[in-house]
Image (cartoon, rainbow, N blue to C red):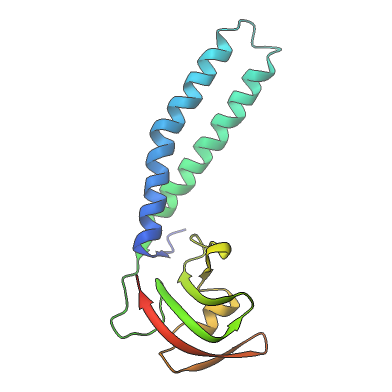
Length: 151
């Protein structure tokens, strides 16, 4: 699986920070929890020990996922052509649902509450490559690109 994963610079940094935190603080906390549980004596009937092992497994799995993802990352820089691309924040008119503004991100950076939509989502696909003034349609609803910015 050598496919590149496109990430915005902010998304890359966020994942890198998460990896750093889990690799240091997260591992230290699990290690301390494991030590505390083992000091209680017999671990054969200790539900805390089983819980600690599950937490450790989940932590190591997430660390592996992040390491793999970051090793495959291709950071997509801002597009100087004022064309919608990864990392662009796009204002549209009229609004689609509650949102009038969307930030286009990779599938690993989605946060729908904050208006961060995937470039693979219906709205993302409809916006990619558009310029100010371009029109498009999403799920039968028409819109016009009012503004594009890169924060």
